[in-house]
Amino acid sequence: MKHVYGWLLLTPAAILLIAFTHYPAVATLFDSFFSTGTAVRPSRFVGFGNYAALAEDPIFWQVLSNNLWFALGTIPTAIAIALVMALWVNQKLPARALVRMAYFTPTILPMIAVANIWLFFYTPQIGLLDQVGALFGARSHNWLGDPDTVLGATMVMVVWKEAGFFMIFYLAALQSLPPELEEAGRIEGASRWYFFWRVTFPLLMPTTLFVLVNATINSFKLVDHLFILTKGGPDNASSLLLYYVYQVAFSFFETNYAATLTVMLLAMLAVLALLQFLLIEKRVHYR
Image (cartoon, rainbow, N blue to C red; front, top):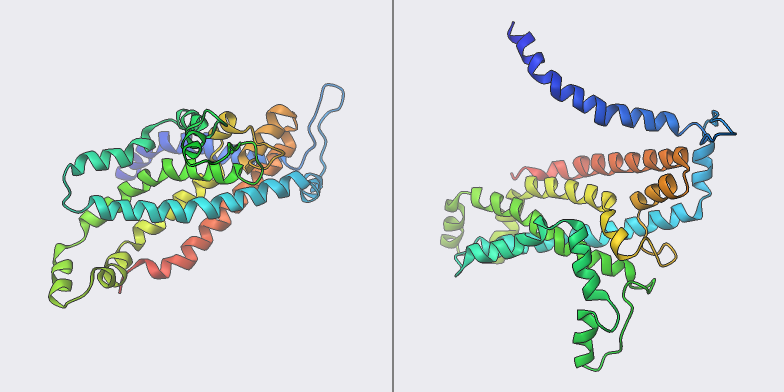
């Protein structure tokens, strides 16, 4: 009876998981092997035809490159800033609660609101960046209209929003560390940097792995800010994979090709997650 009771408790969650996660994933994989049907041209099986078209799609490779650079720029930066902030607010500071709240505030803002705030910063001539730059004689610059700066500008905004979220996990991990370790380090004459690098940081590796996986997933699923800031432009210079999936599905109505893009995105995330666990798992537990 206990086993039956346990399965009954799990059934609602299992139904939701299958209905909204596993079934859509399988259906998307199935759709990727068919062409997009219309009123006059029914859908037909094309095998790996969509994947062959994907390999020859120059926009896909550009968007993939954008997303990889976006991930490389945002993930280590956000994690490093989060760790520094956590170390800072874990100390005895005046108005420490206020400082923690200030660091965490960007996290609770919706991405659409954050994008609107940073749109004001980046607007040419009247934006905050150009206004400050004008005080030092700098020329006005269209940060979001220049292909050379648009991706970096979006990276800065995402790091500003996510660093405070990751800081909470590091702060919780720091507060769970035994205070006797720091006391023993002082007695042994260890410097702050040596103690952090040899003791604190290795003990934070489980948290780092958790944050790294979440940061990686976030870097490939963020799309809200592009609707407000750039619409993927100029000339797809800021378009990311998920935004390209949206464009293909709902602007070009190529739903089956969008399914192919989605399968590739899911496969990439699965491979990245596996690599992170396989490569970092050995360093997670401090010995």
